[in-house]
Length: 184
Image (tube, rainbow, N blue to C red; front, side, top):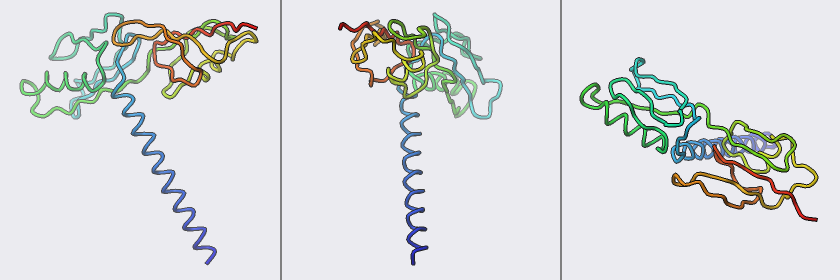
């Protein structure tokens, strides 16, 4: 009887972990689909069954890429879903009957952190990164750092804005984080 209780508990734990992993994967996919592409991002565009239409590129400042059969297309400022739709519509009919387009962000543009951290500079973005974790990547806070609120310069809707954020807030690619000096 005790063996069955252990088996049931293990199965319940496996089911729970599977559920949590599915939720994490769904969250990551949702975040990527909402993510707005910017210069410095590395993307891969694939069309199922069409190897000659696979493109891997890092987006430049102007954000325009040359795509086979479509010519120049603007990617910066668009979401992954918008780019998929744009390429799908461009290829549908003239070249392919029912294209299956996939756009993946291979590498996000870096974020930058300066001010009262031990190693200021640019660091690779990682989904789920908080300001606290970003400071840890930068060697941690200095003794004089204000750990409650920091300034973040972020592009929102194409406009750069400076906002004050708590260290538990999420960092986005391209953010410029400034850790202020605290007052004693």
